[in-house]
Length: 369
Ligand code: GN1
Ligand code: MG
Image 1 (tube, rainbow, N blue to C red):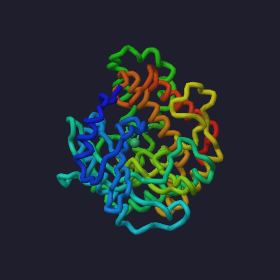
Image 2: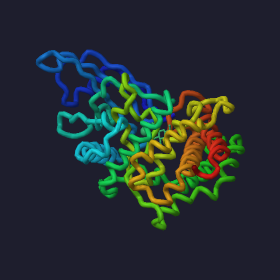
Image 3: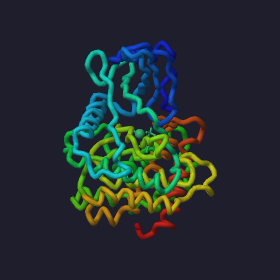
Image 4: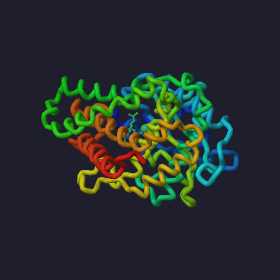
């Protein structure tokens, strides 16, 4: 399990106090979300002369996953600034209330600090919002997809070369397959034999794996800045009105291909079960949600998508699921060294869910619409 050792309160406080925060620190809690970093929320009283209250979100970043933290933080700073500066796109219900994430500077002027030997960053907490693993309605799915489409439109004026590649080949399905093949060859825990059916399901679909990379190489599809982790729970919704307020988790904002974001959004948001469900009979694709996601994404993204991209929207959802299955399965074989897990076989369960989603998408979305 790649989780960092647990922290004590004083260690956490040492990290928090390295940021330029004033007032009286009155408490903190851990926020258990995400498979990579550790996240905490702090509360401050007497924040201003008027005695206000404020909250901040602190993350102990996983530098085993993100080996180049300065590059990661460069990307986050560039993207958040660009979102603040870029002209607002078309204003509708899904975009009118969006604000960009805001970093808090460290006392030394940087965007992150090192405390207890690990890197930390702090964001302003976005108050009055909630996030969801499953959409409450088709309207919510439409709004999330529309907000991610708008996010891509606004970042289309950012030169992809301004961003650093923090995890090489992150979106590259061909490379992910090679990493899985490599994990099987090494097989350090002797687990490869017991996952033969899952490996076979992946290898049966080998021919599909290079399609997007080939399109990039042949310039049939442009390389663009993408979000890279468009799970529904990375959109914060207003707790009262259910409209998107903020797109979070900018760690994987990198040069990629736009449909990765659409595919990732579908495989998470239209799924009828959790990402780590054990009863595979509950795992399918909700087609009403799929259609809402497609229409919502196109609401803004229609402005820049090429004909090739429009034709491969459903395919991208299948490929992103298949590729994530490879990643979960490789991590299972390697002994759960990348994604946080909390039970034996957790990554295998996750891989099985993605593979079931691929089968369901092949059944329900065979033609790509
Ligand atoms: C990881 O930690 P979280 O939930 O933000 C992963 C994504 C996967 C996702 C699957 C840097 O994201 O690529 O799609 O888990 N992030 C990284 O739930 O590997
Ligand atoms: Mg993420």
